[in-house]
Length: 503
Ligand SMILES: [Fe+2]
Ligand SMILES: [Fe+2]
Image 1 (cartoon, rainbow, N blue to C red):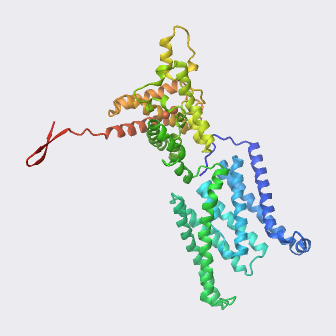
Image 2 (image 1 turned 90 degrees about the horizontal axis):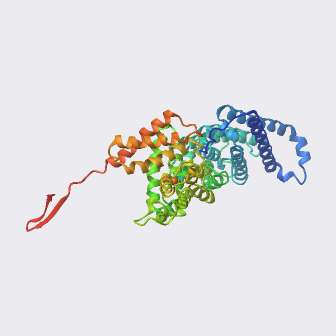
Image 3 (image 1 turned 180 degrees about the vertical axis):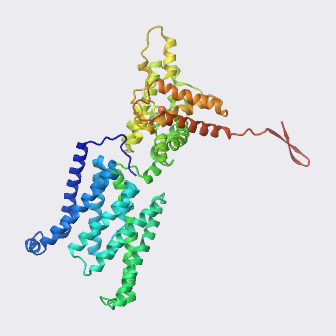
């Protein structure tokens, strides 16, 4: 799944731009296919070849154009987010380009049945989504069928039809099982499952050839021929997932896609920056884990993407890595701010939002993390140092010198992280075992941010804020409530063994 553009507007010019981009990528796709089909004829014989088969290829070109146009209109009516971003269109065609090159190479060098038929379905499923994958699986199967039929690479027409059915069913099976594949390794297992429809069709094909009496060609017995074809099917199924796993990281990084796999890797405690945070700022790390739990519950309550919320929350304070010891959660008994002016302290504290943004960008992590990191304090004042400065001066103070620089949260998830972050600290300061106390603290956190217009640039509603408050109260009181007080017991060693007495 790719990160959706929040609040993207659809205008006539966006439509024109996306249609032009689609056309450009289609021309590139045709150039690649033509290169594969006629590459060897470029240095002679192309003119004669075209005189003979030109009309057929023109018809094929029309079919390919029609299928591409249908793809454009499908996304125009069903999911404009795909068309709204040039990156997504490029991604869509890059997957198709790569698939046709691989299919041609394997089809030419090995066999038409050994092609990685589920590659498009797997890639689009992970990079764009399930519905997009189902549609693109049909389209890629049809496109390959058109190319096969008109390029005449195979000797038998039955092979084209079988190949069409195999491509479609293998891709669909891959999509059905893909939602359960939570790790990259499990995807390899899907490769084995895809083999079932491929080999079933190939087996039927061989059976019909046996009945026809045409089986066992090329000096092979019917049994050897069946085994050979089943072997090709196995190769095609497994290669679909192997090639998918090999190219997915490249696509993830070129198109900066936040796939479920990448998200899982980035949120594991082994992820580079999180590991550093654990070692150098353990207090911040524990706080981030808690905020992640709260953000997850809040996102679930308002129907936002739970995985994105959790991941963004884990990274929200990584900017504290620059001066970890200047933040309360990492301090021991000694407070470094005692030696600094309130202005300087406020400057160090507020820089963690911008530093987080820069650090995340420098590590080529998803833009979405960087946006949440820089927005999670909005333009809120740093109350502690503002109050400290007020005590030290009789003159006027500019509150903006003691405030975060923004921007304010631009998405619901950034707003969730802002509220979860402040609530975690606020509830820690009160007796959180009592839900009324926790509710009061969280209500104050939300109201303060509403008074200071922190939610004016994102589309969060009052209903969302109420649901978030309830989710936070439930989670926080749940966390602190289960810390049961154990009775103190004194142990005494007697002649008959050890005895316990309650104090
Ligand atoms: Fe922060
Ligand atoms: Fe924080």
